[in-house]
Amino acid sequence: MTKKTNSTFYEFIKTYILRKAKFHFVHFLKHLAIACLYTYIALLFFVGFWPFNFAQTNMVTLDMTNGLQLITPATVYTQTPPEKLLNMKEFTIFLSLSSDYLGADGYARILTHSLDEDRMNFMVGQWKDSLVFKVKVDNKTMPVHFETEGILNKNEKASILIVFNGNELISYKDGEIKGRMKTGLIKFSHWNGSYPLVIGSEADGMYTWQGTIYSVAVFDRALSPNDMETLPSHITNLSPVIWYDFQRKDENVAGYRLQVNGLEKQNKALNWLTNKTNETNKTNQTAVNPPLNYSPTQHAVVTDLGRGMPADLIIPYYFKPYKKPVLEKVYVRWEEYRKNLLDIVINIAGFIPLGFLLSMYLTQKGLTFSKALMLSIVAGFVISLTIELLQYFLPTRTSSMPDLIANTMGTALGTLLRVKNVEWFIG
Image 1 (cartoon, rainbow, N blue to C red):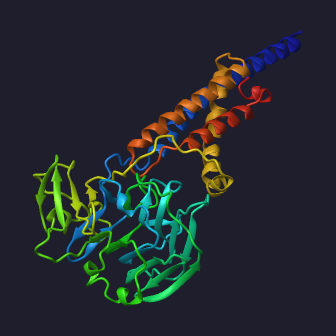
Image 2: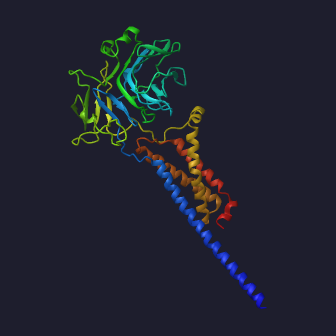
Image 3: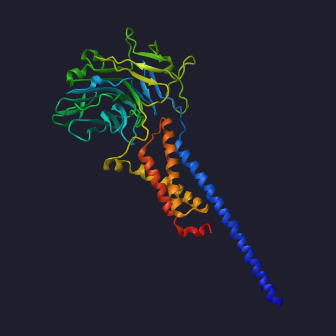
């Protein structure tokens, strides 16, 4: 009898201890799941707002000796769209520059007449050591793509020309032909007159380029080899439509001026753009840094010396792109999905754990799986929407509708992975 009693007692103690252990273990797992959920949400916001540069300095230096120096991120653009570039039948684009960019993450924008990569009149860019030119033409959905390899060597000053003579595109480097492409007769009558001219980035701040630009000019005709030999010293005689000279030494013409609250101050050297130490102290380059008696709301203006209505450039103190999109871009072509496939996959994968953890938390609260599914997707959408909207205020990040859609899909997928057969995990 005693042995039976002892056995029953021991069995009771064992069962009690196991139940208590299971109870505490389950509660530990529940609290751990909640902690993981909150931590992961915080991580999503951290990644979404990185690098937290809500007031990013525009990394541009300008003086009359070293030209216009651009360090990522940097942007310079026209105050008003240069409508005088419309209706050209032939053209020549001249660039005197030295590249410090050898990246392969998209086409870095040297000079572009566009709003973004889909709304473009023309673009001069760089990919590795290649010069890339894209131009919108009539009766074609995609722009004409003209690329010349080995033309942009790092830290090498060069005179680059892109010429369209009515029948072909030709690229020159220091007066020597480097590439040509037969196009036949093409027209540019559908160019959009509302697009700005931008140097150093796309108009939305993407695809920044790094290097130094000494002179930029656009002509509404194909220059002859004899004309090219006179560049850049006799550029005025060739009557450019657009011309920015970043090494101007003409004492009779003020090439730059400073605007503060609508007031202008003539300033030939723009000392506040010159010889200032980079705020990061990690490079030997220099950055925009105004004197103490000016506010950061000011910007410098570079005079357009071409003919017709001036299309002056502005250099903002902060990296503030010409136009920041807000959830306005949706992919409509398969090519866009293919090009951005990695970004789409990352955005989906990044929100799968959120959906899983949200549904786990909600089912713990007693909600049915269908309600947990719906609320998890809504919560993931709201979190992603908040991140995307706040990214508008981050100069180096973009607010993207495809990202919002991909994040919501990732949340839904993570929720579906939390099927009922894992209920044993939380008892």
